[in-house]
Image (cartoon, rainbow over all chains, first blue to last red; front, side):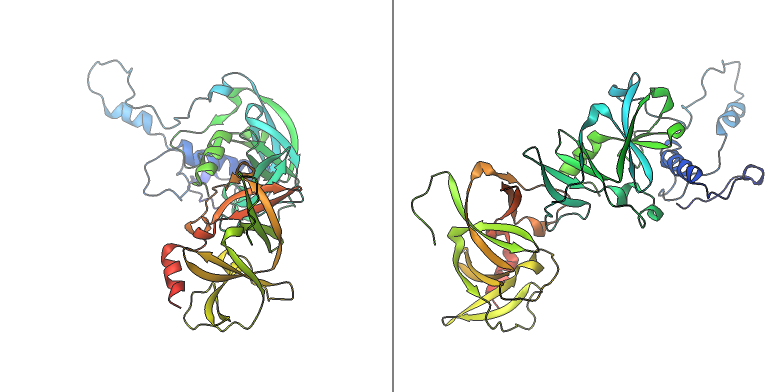
Length: 230
Length: 156
């Protein structure tokens, strides 16, 4: 991913991000920073500016009267959304790999897992992310590959062949993935939750400790159904 | 081609193959199935129009089903067929990879087509039916072309 380095000289000793975990951390961090530090920039493709510290400045500039220091005018930038209802207490996630990136889906939103079917019936005239239909227990599963919208571009080229489908929304949708990994119990505090104004509504949050991004299964299913995704 | 004695709820469809997939169209709209004959190209015709044929003295426009559905082109071969259909009083032919059989599908067997970022030109997919572990795509011939396109084809 492009990452402009606007930081002051003394704070950029680690410019070379070659290491896999480091690259992933940067990616995940980038996913959320773009959202969390919502500064009203003209468009938004540019990465976030250097860490600013505006709050104290304002506080000093208003030396008005003996008014209590109580009100730092607006809530500062890290306005993150609170955890969704299913994450008010520790919750379990299934981790899976997509293009080498680890993604997670909360178990409460997971319908099932199936091995990548050999038979997928493509539907002409649809978005390229829709690979087609397959049958699972007498039900037609719509198979989608969300990687072009989720992965950084450099991850798309050398993807391993898909190994599994992650079923969501009562099995209506199957998300292609490289492979399924493990389940993980997370406490809500470990997750950096996406802010509501974020540009990536498919993202619930990221877990830097485990280098994974949690998908918003409800949003995915809703927007795929409406045909507005991708 | 239509048979009278049928269960009221079931509809008969002619199935054909395109790019390894099976499609079904209402048998009532199928007039006949032809082997591929000489098709005269029409200059300036839309890209999905292969040309015209002479069908017992009548000029019939032939549409390439692959092109219409955004599939890869394929040269015609022994199995290729031109299915003559009638839509809204207009007779056209559609070129398909092969014609398979006539099947019966009840309305409840046809699930509505998914809507995943599909464009206007794919509204011809009426639904999907499951048969023998395989999915069959049911095509609404009335929507194979838009009204404007039907009008354009009529004037070729």
